[in-house]
Image 1 (tube, one colour):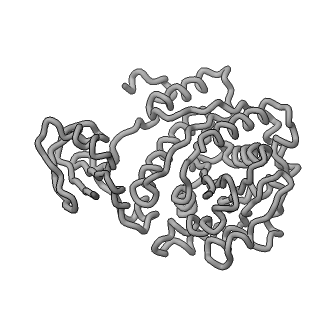
Image 2 (image 1 turned 180 degrees about the vertical axis):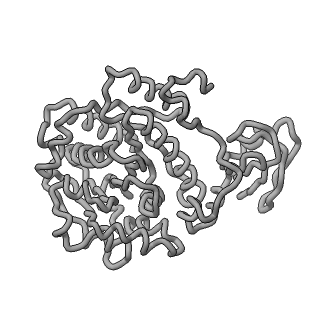
Image 3 (image 1 turned 90 degrees about the vertical axis):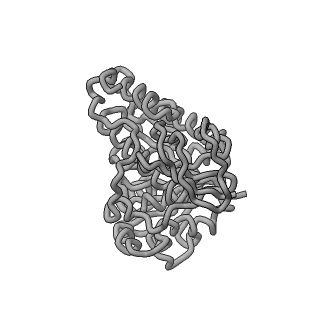
Length: 252
Length: 99
């Protein structure tokens, strides 16, 4: 059976895309499923957060996208459970290398076809920009999850991303679905947070998933190369991502 | 609609039909491919007014065309007077049919 592919995307930076990928990936792996995480951000934050040193990996997703190697050669195991297709700073050059290539949107999809039977789910951490790499992720995925901080600029980012999702449906991936918007760093005590969530539901009719509350535990976890599922197993944040993993897998 | 939104969100864009002009050297240049064709058993409708391309089922297309009297012919691209599923207004729609 082919694996399910979920892109975690929002071109707005600092909305907890990487935290969401690392934590949800670990939570799904905890249930015994095979998980592949893909770091598609040249900053390699997911790679670092999963305990892998980006400047010491032999191969990265950059080599895969340029067709130098197959994905299996670059995938590494992590202590947290999921396998990882790591990134390195070289990935910043991939945009330029792919820019004028016809069919550049399908490079990741074609690479993943080689490993699609090895995993139950593949989760892609997109870069905080709208470029060829993000289009590759949205073209390869069946669903997109949109993490969003419940504030005005993030709301605006969702509007822009949904336009891009429409473009992707139009040109490269007709079947792309929006899994939902995931409010992150949520502080339910502020009126603005509640207003943003209500406005997203009203304007777009998108499913808004259970919010992830703000916690310093999330910021502490990457330092040890583990997710919050390991560093603070009993925290509310860990439980929130277990719940998200359940929702994600129930839909498959 | 916008007057009912909270003050902090009034300048945030609402979902709207895409602008008529698409700059081929702008965001469109991220894509190297032409538009994907509609799936078997569906119709792609492109609105003359809002220029949004929507893919709908045959049944939904028939509902949007009512009370018109138009029978689509497989393999042809035509213009039909019907309601646009994106901007909800009646106008000429280009039909791309795939049987």
